[in-house]
Length: 189
Image (cartoon, rainbow, N blue to C red; front, side):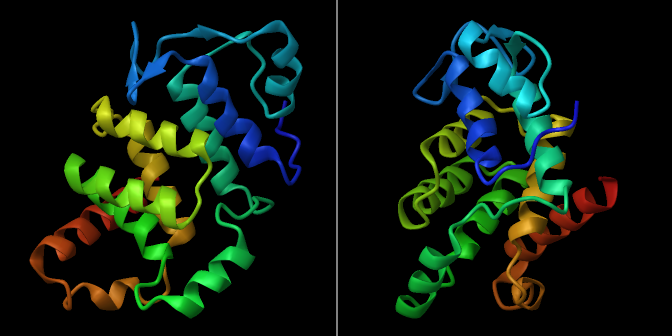
């Protein structure tokens, strides 16, 4: 069943992370493929977003997000009105925060990735569920997983600032390497 695209689908997908036992961004008693039960009253919601099982794993959530990000009907991850307000008041474009998180995560720089992610959470007002999901895949060292890498590349591509490629030379070799890693991942998707 294809997901029913409503304005709330993004929240419905990220809310699925609540069924995975996570403490301090660490999955308890499991890994990316461990299946955790979905409460009976939530199974219909899971079916509505294209998940036809009574259990869910982190990989399932990532694959649902990939589907959402690749669909032309997708909703925006960041509220456009808040984005416009932020753009008028600060010199560092806020969309770079989440984009830089993706680049750092693809480069497996956990410290930088988590720093960018936490700033994104606070400044861009990311949903708690989305923040927990991204922190979980970063802290649990799932950054080598092909589905995680595909998700991060697609997310980065979805939110990439127009001027990002022009910054390759401005920010030095480390940024250039991260951007090249990102480009390679995009070619694989």
